[in-house]
Amino acid sequence: MLRLSSLSGQRIPQSETFQAHYGGGEANVAVSLANYGHEVYFASKVPENDLGEAVDKHLRRYGVSSEFVLTGGKRLGTYYLETGVAGRGASVIYDRAASSFAEMTELEWDLAKLFKNATIFHISGITPALSEAWQQLTIALIKKAKAAGCKISFDVNYRGKLWGQQAAAAFLKQVLPLVDYCSAGKMDALYLLGIPEVNGKSENEALVYYYQEMQRQYPNIQVFYSTLREVRSASANCLQGTLWQNQQYHESQIHEIEPIVDRVGGGDAFAGGVLHGLATGLSSQETIDFATAAAVLKHTVHGDCNQFSQQEVLAFLAAGSGRIVR
Figure (cartoon, rainbow, N blue to C red):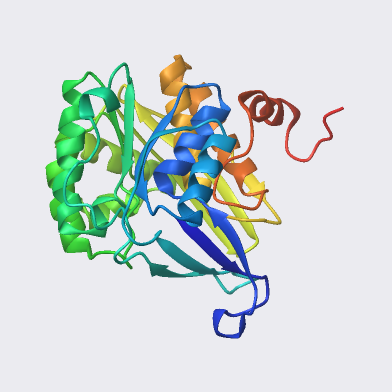
């Protein structure tokens, strides 16, 4: 996708200049994993024009293979971001209708080749939100990936501006029985999975309950993960990562992020860090510490994707926030 962001302190109706960045949920996760040394392929469809070429160059710049990026269709999906300041949060306008990817009605890849030797297939809830066709295609892709021996990673990533809670909840009932690793938290449990709210517990204690209930509904899911975010302002947040694995709850330290340079993609950087930990055999605690640190670092750079290597994330963890690395 193409993101066009207003400059800080400007509203979209008054903006004459926008910052351009390329990204998207699955693409951002792919970039993170490539930064950590994994062999990563991204599958999509873009128009055969300069914008499509820019997507290809963006992926390859960060070491992600574009072998399975198809060309065709009329346009690249776009969205506009009005940058938040102080107490005014960011606001998004989607312009994704009739994009090359959204208009797909069949799986155009060679699926045997797509999943050959793959170990993890990652996809998010934004993809099935694009069309009814993509709800069916997402399930078909996941089944093909499972048949090829892939672990299935799914980020619920609910976007209310793309589809409603009822449609999203109905889709989750279809997809979650096929999933191995899932990014889902309290709000997903309450409003998409129908889990009753618990009262009288701390936020972390309540999250343990929601993880337990989600796994009770879907015992096939081996790992659940999410972040706890305290929003003090658009440019000052506190972030903590949480992980549920082997019936055990793990949490990272709380990181204070101020000032935030660009929050977009922080969740994708977190997901990429979790998948890195799972793929390389890190302990649950090491995984959640690494993933949260990666998400924090993403907040410090412009653009949608994480731009830090494994060594840089580990150095950040070892040095502590803000210390000079000499």
